[in-house]
Length: 208
Image (cartoon, rainbow, N blue to C red; front, side, top):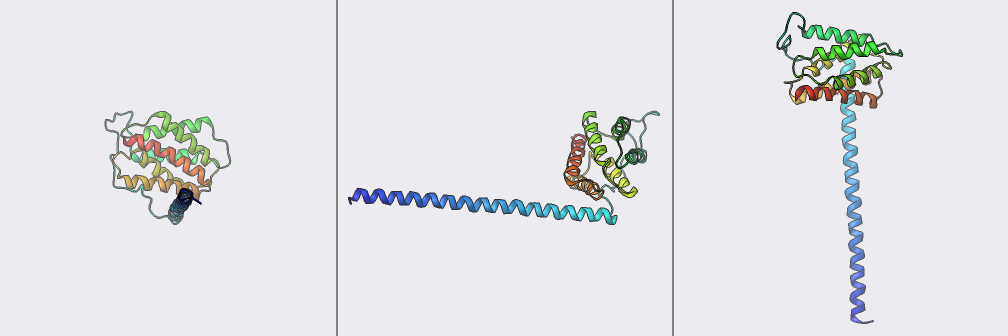
């Protein structure tokens, strides 16, 4: 065998070894990435379980904050809306959504209007509010929330509608608590996540 043949054979072996090493590195990186994603999912589910236990045990909701402006920035005799009035309206709307019953268009429309009126700062678009109201009513029609849980949910919703100056951490905790309330109320996780995402969109527009 010539020197050239030996050199060619050595080069082929080196290339094969290099390719094998690259494949091995790729597998290790992929495995590590997969383990990292799995760890993140485990942490997220553990946090969700804690939030659900907080709801069940009546731990104060993150929406319980220092007093905020009680009325609109430029109220008139016909449009003055206090925080207490907004909460009462939202609670009434939620109570009107009965489990395992068809939610009428009137109920959905009333909820949308009451949510829009509850905003005392930057207004989100009516389309965004309506999307949240529709997804929420659909979820609650198959849920079983207690009166206390309905009140907590209303409090969270009202807080997000007026979250212009909230710290980001508190805003996020209110959303997490909202998802937990829905799941404790027997709403499937995927649906609870979707409804909470719609509420977050409303909040993002309020906070812009």
